[in-house]
Image 1 (cartoon, rainbow, N blue to C red):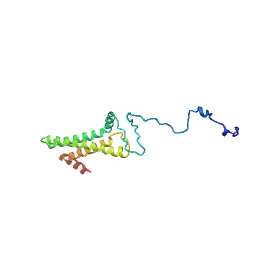
Image 2: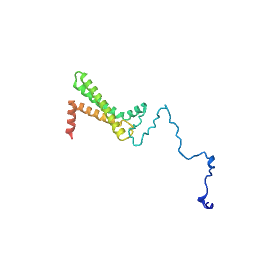
Image 3: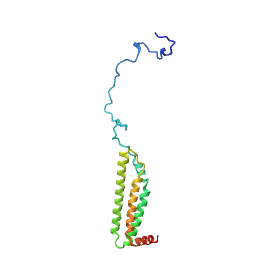
Image 4: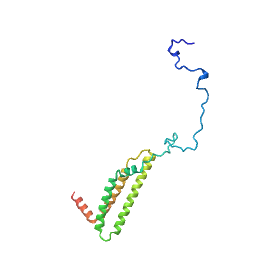
Length: 171
């Protein structure tokens, strides 16, 4: 037996004799698994499995995200509407064709907005794994498109082109 004066030789745990020991050597018994219980997803998946999707926010959160940056679209739409109005009034005649053209322009702008949102989702969320916190990029794309449409309407008005040429001639 070892010398009890050495600190490493002290017993730290007093174990009961072998017959009274509740612990036994051998394999642990595994009980039967849960039966007929639904799977509860934890969201972690298997290691290396990158197929898990980013959790989508609730509908009210989605609406709030869509509103961020809507001012850009509103300014672009207002500019396009004013320029369209000037073009439609200066052209004279029936307003049926200009109204249909403006509605078509609005539908194209909405389609461009939807395309920008889809591209943002595919690139930012799926490929880069980032969470989008607003729709500012899609609103900016739509506003730039509508501003370009507005300038195209202005270039179709003779008196605006004449005024621009006169101002440019001053410098």
